[in-house]
Length: 605
Image (tube, rainbow, N blue to C red; front, top):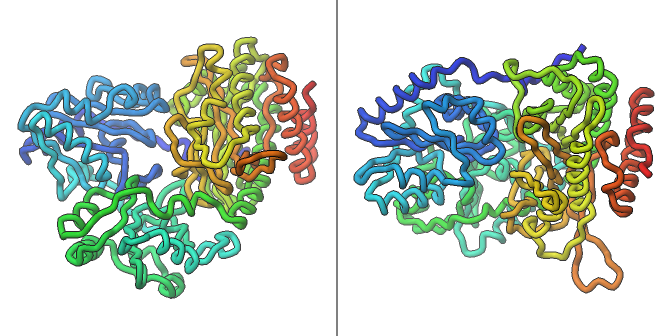
C-alpha cells in the first residue's frame, strides 16, 4: 500500500572491509612519514548533513551517525561519539579495530595527548576542522613534544576508489513572501553588525542561503548549496559557488546584489585581503582552519566569533513565523492521519519499523507540498526506541508487535520546517512505562508553560524538563531542545534548550521541546513539539517577559498517561492543547481521521 519516495531511512552503509581500509590508511601515513590522522565527521562547512563524498568517517569505520570523530595511530585507533550514539556506534563498528569512546568522558584531544609519543607528527585536513578545534590539539600535543601537520590532500580521498562526486544541485530563489525581508535589508543590517571590521567570510551555507534569499539542493534533508561568501563593509558581496549550480536566469537575479566566483578563487582573494591587513570576521562554528590561517599568514586580522548572520536568522520575522504555523497545520494533519492509521493497523501485527516510516512519509507526500523529509525518520520499536538517534535499516528492521513505538520525524515544506516526536503503545502499557511516560510529559508541559524574563537562556530552563525524572533518579543524555530554521536546517543555532546554552532566548526564535527517557534494551520515550518564543504581558510585571507558543499539532497517547501523576494545571494544559489540535485539524481531516482525532483528543478528567 505504501511506498516511500525518498527512502532515506533505509540507506545501508554497505559491506565494509574496515580492516583493509584502516590498514591502507596506516600504510599511506607511514609512507608520508606521519604518525597519525584526525578524522572528523564533517565537510568544509561543518554541516550536520554532508554530501556522500564527505562521509569519510563512515567509509573508514562503518559508523553512520551524524556526529563523530576518529583518531588513527600506528597501533591504536579510537572513535568518539556523544550520548546519542553510544549504543549505535558499538553496533556499527568493529571494536577490535576502533575503540568506541564517549566524548563526554574523554575528548579526542586529551586521548591523543595520552597516547602520542614525543616527536610524533599528527596529520589533519585543514578544510575539515575549525581553528578552535586545531588550537586545542596543538596546545595539548605541544606539551607532549608532538606536532600537527596540515595536509594539502586528504589521504582518505586518495584511497576511496569509488568516492562519489561533489554535488552540483541547482539553486533557486526563495519566494519573497516567505522570506519576509529583502536581500538589501539583510545586507544593510549585516554591515551595521560588522562594526569596525572590513568584512565577513561566511562559511555556513544556511547563513548564506538566508542572507541572499536562495535555497539549494546539495545535501539530503536541508535545502542548501555548498558555497562560501565574502561580504565587504563596502562594495559588492562575492559568492563562491560552483558555476554549474547557477542557471543563467538565477545568475541574472543574483548579480543584482553580488558577484559570482568559482570556489578555487577564494584562497587567492583571502590572501589579497590579508596583504591589505584587513580585519575579517569568521564563524567560529563553521569556518575551516585553512581559511582563517590563509588570511592570517598573508597579514590580515581574523576575528573568529559567532557568525553575524546566526542571530538575525534565528529570530524569525512575521512571514517566516506565519509560514511555520501553516507548515505545522499541514504536517499535523499528516501525522494525525498516520497515527489514526497506525492505531488501527499496528495491533494486527503486520507492520515493521520500515513500513511504518514509509507510511508516514506517504501521508506527508499526499498533501502535495512535501519537498523532503527534514531528517531520516526515527522509526523505533521496543529496544530500538532506547537509542535516541536510531536509524532503521533492512538488517535491523523489527516487526511492530505489542510494545512501545517511537517515531521522530519531520518535513521540509517551502513555508517551514517541522520536527515532531510521538511515543505510543501497542497493547496495554505497564505501570512502570506509564510512570516514565508521564514524567516525560510533565517535563514537556513544564517547558511549554514556562514564563521567563528577557535575558534567560536555554540553560536556565533546561532543568524544567528534567525535574520529574530527577525525582525518580532518572535523566536523559541529550539537550531538551534545539533551534529550527525557516525552510532550512531542522537543527539550527545558536539558540538551544540545554545545560550548556548561553544564548538568550528572543521572541521569534523557534525551538524544539523534546524531553525523553531511555531504558536500554527495553524502550524509549520522547515527546516533541516545536515552540516559538513570544512576548507575554503579565499584569503588575516589572520586566519584559517571554513564553512559548506551541505550533506542533498532534495528540499525545492517552493510553500511556498515568492520570494521577498530573497536577490540575498540567491537566488543564493538556486538555487545552488537545482541544486546539481537534479544532484546527478536524475540519481538514477525512471522516476516519476525524473520528480518531475526536477520541484521541478527548478531555482527560
